[in-house]
Structures are given as C-alpha cells and as structure tokens.
Image 1 (spheres, one colour):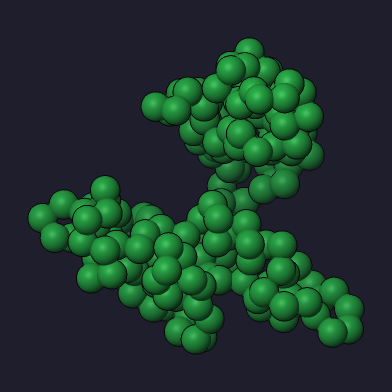
Image 2 (cartoon, rainbow, N blue to C red):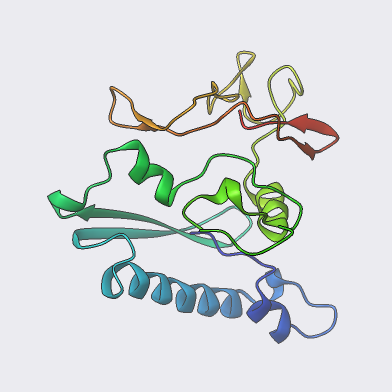
Length: 187
C-alpha cells in the first residue's frame, strides 16, 4: 500500500498554497490510520481468510511518501493456488469504462459490470509505461528491454508459474487505454 497525496483526508487538512510535501506529519499520520484499517481488514475481518503469520515493512519513497510491503501467510487450506482464486482477488485487465445500463453485476466477475471510476483509477495509478517500442527512453528500460518484463504475454486464464509466481489473466479482449499519448492494452 502506498500513501496517495491526493487522499481526501490529506487534501482537506492542507492550508491554501500547501502541498503534501509541506506536511510530512499529516501524510504520515493519515497513512498510518489507513494502514491500521488495512490490518483490521486483513487480520480481524479476514478478507483473504485466516492468516497464520504476517510481517510488514514501512519504507519512504524518494518523494517522501510512505509505503508498506506486507507479507501474509494463510492457513494451508486457504492458500490461493487455483486460477479461480487468483481471479477472485486480482485483476490485471483494463476494466470497462462506461456505466452498466441496468444494474450492478457481481463484483466477483468484473468484466460483466461497468466501472468508470475504476477505469480512471487504473489508468492513473496502475498502468505501466509506455515502454519498450512505444518509449525506449522510459526509466524502466535497461539494455533495450523493460526491467519489469512489460509488456506481458496475453493469457486466457491465471496460472501458477513454475517459480511460484502467478501469471495473471490478461485476455486479448481489445480493451485499450490512452496513457501518455500511447495506446496500451492488457499486456
């Protein structure tokens, strides 16, 4: 989880002309409160089911904003191992951008519902690049390749790779986003 300087709680407390950089005390306190809430969600409300062990480390980015890395270990029966389980908690695909004409459809099948707000959040915070052939000067480029291995291959389903890391579902469904004047897809 990374502190977002545009969180409502931060913006509301800034005086005219101030930015989050002027109030590290404020950003740290609000980040801590949101971290505490996340820990309640993970460990008391058990949103991923029963956690048997956990550890977290808080770091500060170059811009001075805190972020946390959390490792959770689930009880054996609750470990996420199948593609259906991965897809229940993680999506690596571009969400729909227009509103659903009728009613909200199950959150467990995001492709059936329309999420304009989620679309804009993914566009702003989650899309990598453009890099590779689209932008060889991106900071992620090393020896003419993205050091984070983008673009990823399309995959019709999530699978467990041999190195224990999942390969998330990234369908070739023709959904695109315009990011930095480049058209990106689920890759």
